[in-house]
Length: 101
Image: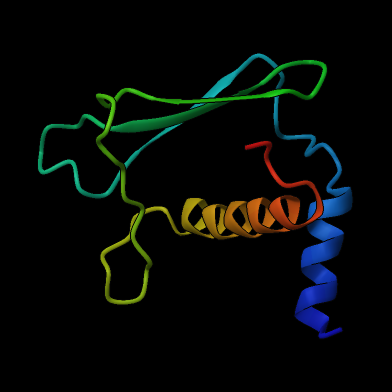
């Protein structure tokens, strides 16, 4: 197993509660392609029991984009990285515990 794979497993399987993260506080971020409208926010709230609530202010069927910082004009490199981690987490959970059909 590569060092990166070991780090990803450690991050996904045992990430401690960050002390900077306050329960019942909404953390929101404007996406990169708002074209001056300043609409299109992604938000997450973590409840005291650890449940994560995620939402956007977009209409159903529309998407938000958080670009890479390398040539893509991304203003939120940590959010972009978090989505990569989320993608890996979904892939691993799908492998271990597939969704019911």
